[in-house]
Image (cartoon, rainbow, N blue to C red; front, side, top):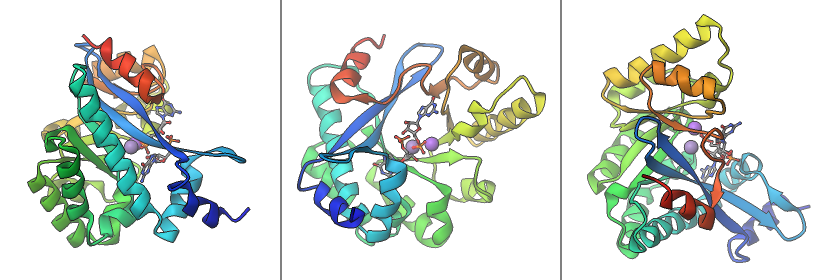
Length: 254
Ligand code: G
Ligand code: G
Ligand code: MN
Ligand code: NA
C-alpha cells in the first residue's frame, strides 16, 4: 500500500467528495452555516479518514491541489443551493497550515470566487492555531488580504493551542469555534463549565461570533445556552451529511 501514490491519484480518479455539517442557532432554530468536510473513498481500501490522509497530503504538498478542489466544490455547491431557492447560508472550508503558507493562496481563493460567481461573504475559511504558529507575520498578511477579498475567517479548534489570546487580538478573525474537547468532556464538574464559560466570554468580549463544536447531548445544549452561546455544531443536530441530505436539512430551516 503506497499511500502517497494512491493519494496522488485520488483527484483524477474522482474519489473525493464533500460532506456538509450544519451549524444551528439554538434560539431561532435557523441554520447559520455549513462546514464542508472532505471524504475520500478508495475503490479497494474504502473510506479513509481525513485525520489519516490530510497529514499525508500536507507532507506531500498534495494538499494544494486537493484544497483547491475542496474550495471550488464547496463554492459551486453553495451557489447551486442558493439558485434553487434554499435558505442562503455561508459555507466554511478548512484550510491546512500548508495552504496558508502557500504564496498563491489569496490568488487561488480570488480565482475560485470569480470562476464560481459566489459572493465572497458566503465563504468562511477555518484555520487552526497550528497554521498561525508557523509564521505569524505571514499569517497576518494573508488574513488581511483574504479579509479584503470579502471572505471571513474563523479560528478552528480554539482553546487547545497555547498562545490563542495574543493571536486573537492581533488577527482579523470573525468567528471562534470552540474545540470539541471542551464541550464533549463537559460533565457537571464546575471546573469544566468555568473553562467553557471563560472561552465563550472571551470570544464575545472581542465581538467574535462564537460557535461551540462537538455538541452531542441536550444537557450540553442547555449548558451552552445558559452561557449565552447560541450557535452550535455537532451530532445533537446533525452529523456531516452528503450534499443531497444537507440540501434536505437546509430546506427544513425556518
Ligand atoms: O470530518 P472529520 O471529523 O473526520 O475530520 C477530521 C479532521 O480533518 C478535522 O480536523 C477536519 O478539520 C479535517 N478536515 C476535514 N476536511 C478537511 C479539508 O477539506 N481540509 C483540511 N485541511 N482539513 C479537513
Ligand atoms: O477540526 P474540525 O473542527 O474541522 O473537525 C470537524 C470534525 O468533527 C468533523 O469531521 C466531524 O466529523 C467531527 N464532529 C462533528 N460533530 C461532532 C460531534 O458532535 N461529536 C464528535 N465526536 N465528532 C464530531
Ligand atoms: Mn473545522
Ligand atoms: Na474545529
